[in-house]
Length: 255
View (tube, rainbow, N blue to C red):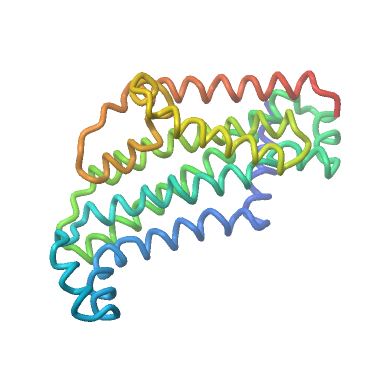
């Protein structure tokens, strides 16, 4: 456990001291600040630029509400941030192997299972903190822009997305063990995302699997009900299985 704690601290310091501390937090910050403002002012901006004809069209569109800002946040998380997570973490383990760090670490008091587990836990915590801060900032900006901004829909929708994001983080941990190429791991990860998106068209998948959590966040933040308790439990269990599979694959893999 001592070696595990040391390696986990090394991972945390690596996040803080490298480009990782900027990419996801900056994306979350940008979407948190811009989403509510765009939801509030886009009709006025487009009408001003497009002239009277466009203005008449926008008069037929319902006045934006705080739910539009919330939906914009989860839409950006699902369509942009999740893809970034897949690409970034395509080298979660393989990057350490290429640099030679992995072989040095696993010859110390850190088991191969502990190596993978530490990476999954530290980066999962980093992702969670980033999203929580971004969600809080989204709510604050939405509150300023719309005044009326009950937070429940925003937090419930974001929680559903976060469970899905941690699932893909675990998947990328496994793929980065199986493939030495970041591009290959990321490509398969994006393919898995596309497959889940398509499979959501089948009702059982849309109700009882991780596929439900692709559309659920945007539906929840739009103010509608969506039964996510079972998909969240299934996805959380699948996440644990993927981390275990990644650890076992790394234990058996030649470095």
